[in-house]
Length: 126
Length: 280
Image (cartoon, rainbow over all chains, first blue to last red; front, side, top):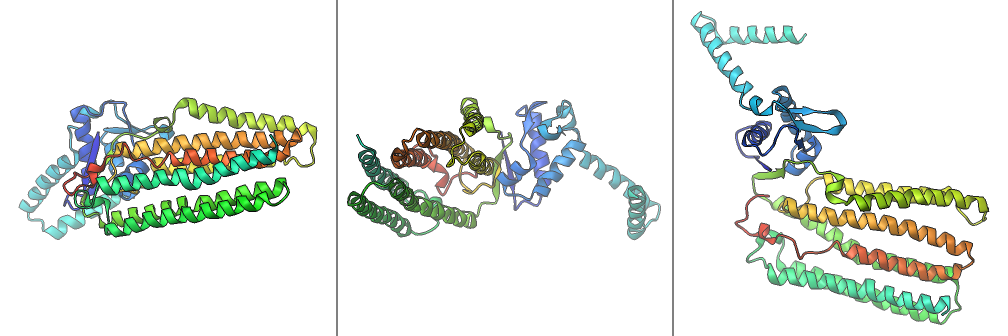
């Protein structure tokens, strides 16, 4: 199973990786429990920064598409097929779009929304 | 047959095999590539003009001719002196170091070409296999366990041998050297397996084939070097030290024979170097 990234595509590289891993799972090319290459191997093969691949793996792990098993490596998650159908980024974007539209209807300005959003996120992180 | 006669036979073989027979095979392979995959059909294979590669081939051939001439001169010089284990053994050793210079030069040249290939690679797409590469993908378990058994056997041998208290015996220093060699080989293999792809056009299949050959070479050289160390110690203990120069020369030939097997092209995919080739 080959993975192809386009360095000139407007889509971020980590997003291309995520999309292709999910596509591999959906098509059955990668089944639950199948091993995946290490971050270092994939980054070297694609001539990408390790952090780019690490970010893609982290987000795939968050979405339950892959799971890291310590020194044994990274594997396709048992629930990967179902998980790869859900695009959390799309979900977040849709919900935020609706929320922002509702706030604007209530009279909030762009900067007020940005400041409030940043304040809430900062409070959560601290 | 005397140790001196055996050495001369082996040394003649060392000159002929390492500086004539094997380099000629390499030159034939270079010629085969230049004739069958020219820049007109495979432009991605040639980051520089064709004349540059023909020049490199010619330099490689000349270098080996010069080394053969030096070898013959050394051979003749040794026939005029009395047999001395150290002198003869050292001659075989230093001459072998000279013999591998063209190989190292070719390897260095190849790396420079691959660097240029990467710089000139204008493709925006890059591909990789979505499967992990593991040691046993490139090395047979039989070879791996043979290396382990020979290595552990060497520890047992050295530990056993220490009881005889020979003044010349280096003891565990031998283990240190063999361990350092194996660690070095393991790091080369690790770099081959997980390191950056040097050739931007090489297919994953070709890369794996090449890595398998390197793994096989490193494994066999590890075993050969360990067995050679055992043999050297045994020859010394049995007072057959005069045969060491002969054994050393034969050992170099075995190592060189295995090393030249890595430079094979018969199963490489040259279609990737065509102008219209897809990204690899």
